[in-house]
Image: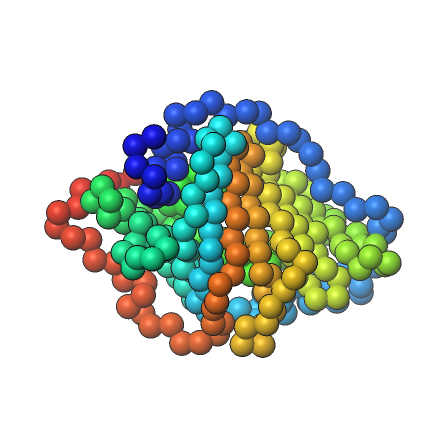
Length: 276
């Protein structure tokens, strides 16, 4: 393998060049659950929404490890996430011991830009609300959805479906205080802590094949940052690509002022611009 320094683009190339395996169609299950009554369902969804609405801005730094089952080496970098609700995201990949970015992704409602300094390339998409995590990095999530998932919250766009029992099922175990939430048409599933309203586990399906596209698992340990509790560790699996991503929180701030300049991108004249 050429150079050991990782960029997410190089990881994507490994994914494209390798032969993926068929994803196993396993489903999330909880034993001993019963459906909620309409008042119980309303209270539970209100709690989940309260947890989501706690998040106005994020400035988080993670130690991140990327693994692919067909590649023996793993790569460890720093990942800096800046988010301003509802859809402004800055995701920066940095090596340990150096300040220069390996990758910089900035996204807003107007589109997104991905800078790769190593090969002087800029990928520019004008798709509404981003999309380069999916098209360039093979992580099938929107940038805003990823931001909410990184702090164990269900993204805003799902709540309209969750509020209708014809679109979503909710069942809970009264002893373990765990609830299984499932979109009936699409098959996406979340396991949620009934007392806190935070995510414990999630599985999202490919809309076409109905195979698992993303699985998220959160550590039991949480930490309070600016009076908001978030998990200390997140594991993300992309089964179709045999890809594992582990994020361990280093430090962060929540609901502090985030300047507009962090969501502005300057493309150097020497960069090649790709428009997918």
